[in-house]
Image: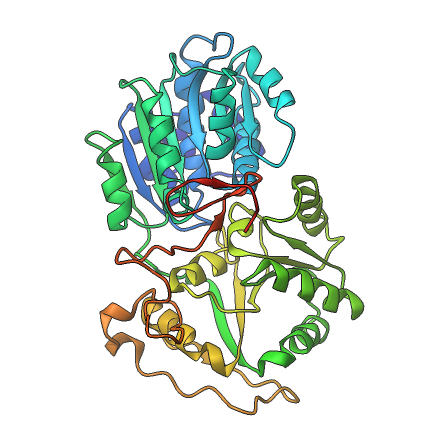
Length: 438
């Protein structure tokens, strides 16, 4: 199948060719025709599958066939969970819509609101936004949705995880009832389906990857090591294996900053990206990483959402995530668009429960590799056959002492801890804004 067969206009096909693409990915082949027909769509796809183009291309075509936006009006709204993802989607809209007379804008927190108000004054055909800043702009009467035609929820699962459910509902109440709805998510979880019932109507469902699957082109390896020797092992791997670009995941913001200082002291150019960093600092760190000025980018899970780097060769889990599904999202940053990738995890003995949860989730035992000179005092025990593990163990965080063995999670599996909303504040599970970033 080629893009020519999907019903896209010549202007969009020219833009696709200029990007170097000739054949649509599975998510694009299934989603684009449905969106062009005006159908509501629920699409499940892992990162790196081309889902952004799956909705931006038909979105641009449908809008190009109508009247331009009026002052302070918005014709299509794309909601994303993080600043980085919002910027990435806006970049795609500009790249694919370069030959179309459509206006777009992106708004998120962490930067001044007045330039964003000015950009909305003339009206925009497509607005990409994070929930918190969008509501701030609505409160200032900077825009209205009376002419809105299309709503897109991108990475809906992550927005729920980050506590944006109440913000999403507030936004939806402001929208016209007659509109096209597109939901893109890594999985069709029960919570996503519950939300979908309040938004989409008779949707076309597109699911191009098995739930919680990891990319077939990603080689996954475990390095057992004592916790205190993790920084030294990471530095050794970067030098010994001549890694020139590596994305490293840290569980905490403090841990990310500390690791960057250690790597810099060892002569490895590094930068951190997380919710406590200003938007300017985050943008610079990502740009330097993409340009090769920084070898190692250390990120937290939420900040890494939306990082889109073509042919990223390797990802390292410096800390294993407490929630097993986040492992799938992390390693999805490599092995994209048909390229091979490697995912390495530095695992200490206290993380074995996390490792078992990950292996149960992906239904495979990950290869262990011992590095000479970094042998741990307490080696990792062999995992049981993950295909025989009880199903209830999937996605559980590591147990903490103190009687409550659910790791602070409620019955729906959502963390009750505060999460950064990546819009200059943080929200708890009820969606209420807090002044301090967690």
